[in-house]
Length: 100
Image (cartoon, rainbow, N blue to C red; front, side):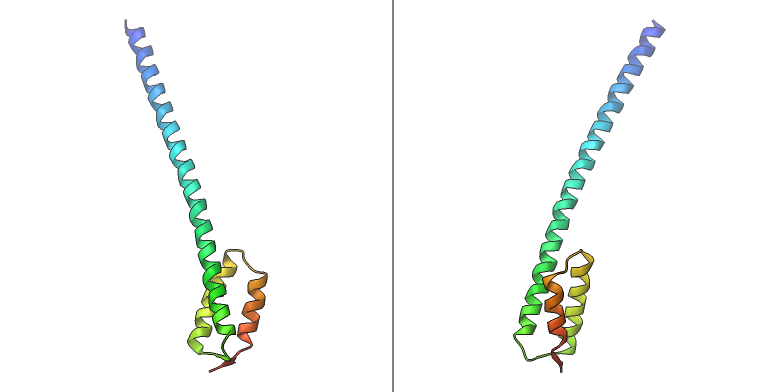
């Protein structure tokens, strides 16, 4: 009887542990998927904000100190996310504006 009880307890513990591991793996996979979606959204927002600011500044004849500070901040975030290319050209052209 004691052997049967031992086997039954081990079976229950093994099944429970397997269920817990399965649940944890499921949760981790969902968190990773959500993180990827969030990272994509952040990249899109950084890109949009940076490009909007550049287009706004390029339409003006000058750039203020506050605008330059904001542009530099946006540029840092933009490039830290691995984006460059056309944005670098827009940034360079903005930096050529007269500072007021």
